[in-house]
Length: 520
Image 1 (cartoon, rainbow, N blue to C red):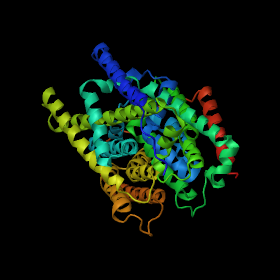
Image 2: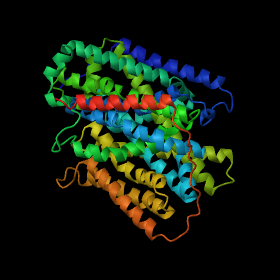
Image 3: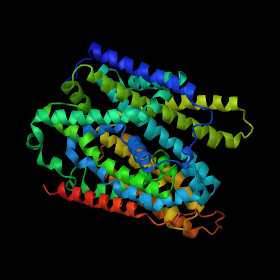
Image 4: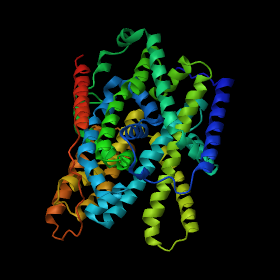
């Protein structure tokens, strides 16, 4: 095994200085910010470049960076399907969902579904959001961060997760979380620069593109693998990824929020297009370092250590500390934001509904209690994820998300495309469908892990979606109750020439990339 060398004194100085500077900026920012200056949707003022960078930044945080390098090390660019195939669903967001979201003038996606199916559906979606925040934004981020800290300091996963939560709480109490949010764009740019530098330095060391292709298996450059491939067979990707893609890119509040804040539909559609262009970079910046790591350090035992192995062996003292600081600060930002979202959704969408006369002090106290409970639950889920055997970090991420996605994807697709779909069917999918989907995931990942009868997890996600969809059709057709809800409004303004041209070019480029990387 390649051991990461210990941090030098300069690394420690940079690591500590980075957090002190962030904290100082956060305290300064909190004194300068005027009351009421931060509006939920930025007064619908976001332009296309704000939207693109914001969506991409939310998607390609340090968790995905570490996971993607791991996937590159073990399987090559095939995991790039999760980045490049996404353009189809970002297109769906731009031309199917965005006109309806903006036309309905909603602030949140539960509010949008409330317009379609009623208040009860909105309430159920609030609980669904809490579950997804706990699992997808908190536990998985803690897990990836725990792997990072465990690699550097050799401490158990539960301790790593607690350290990250403690840092997040420390920043929050001292106003430092604002610092991380305030500088998040710059951190993303720094992450991109670091990864690009790592790719260039690694390519140089391995002997360029020709040296790299000679050092790794030929099938590492194919986006589609045979259907008997254990890791990424083509059929489960083709059928299974769309379920996750619709949920993640079209219905997840964190991802769709920038489009909801667009200045107009035209800017939202261009912003979504810009996100699609930025996703092309994922393979070069996040997956390629893992492939280079295989060429340089083929004896590495744990693929999840691929990224930090490259950093600690190719970068000089000081640069390692900077990388670790940026990764940790970005993780703290994600964890703090997720805890805040969890607290806000429970307090404002659930507690206030049942306690309409609650005082501001009571709401603050409830929010703090929810934050503590959420932190404890997320550590427990993180430890459970760490016990999953037989999957690398990237596949753990995708499989967990694959069991969250089907109910939400089904409700939004049927809600938008089929007017006959009833409230009862939607609520059934969001309650019993969620229990069925996540229950199957628990059996697959923990109880009957590794059993031979299981299909690929992406195929399993597809079949869960089909079962929930069939049940929704049956319930809707049998439901004789009247629909007492209004249908959402849709903006019908035609796409501009610029929007059409940008999307046409992106589609041509993506088809070209798929043809090129399947001709080997």
